[in-house]
Length: 110
Image (cartoon, rainbow, N blue to C red; front, top):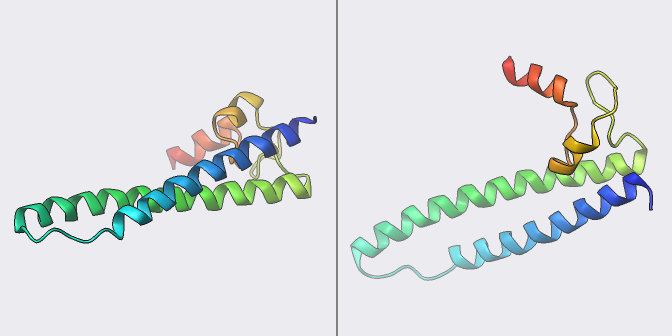
C-alpha cells in the first residue's frame, strides 16, 4: 500500500465518522420541542451547539473530499503554496492539510 493509499483510507474512515456524527445531529435537531418554556430555552441553546458542531463537520467533510481529489490527481501531500512536501506527521494529524506547517503558520499570522 502506498503512502497516498494509506492516507486515502484514513480520510475515508474519517468521512464515515463524520457521516455518523452528522446523522446523529440531524436526528437530535429533528426531535420535538418540549412544552415547558424553561425546557424550550435549554433545548434552543443545545440546538445552537449542535448546529455549530454540524457546520464544523460539514466543513471538515468538504476539506476531506477535496483531499481525496488531490489523492486522485497526484497533488496530495504537496503544499498548495510553496509546492514542497507536507510532512507525514502533519498529514497524520490533519490529512486534509493543503499547506505545509511553515506556510500554514505564515497564513495564520496574517
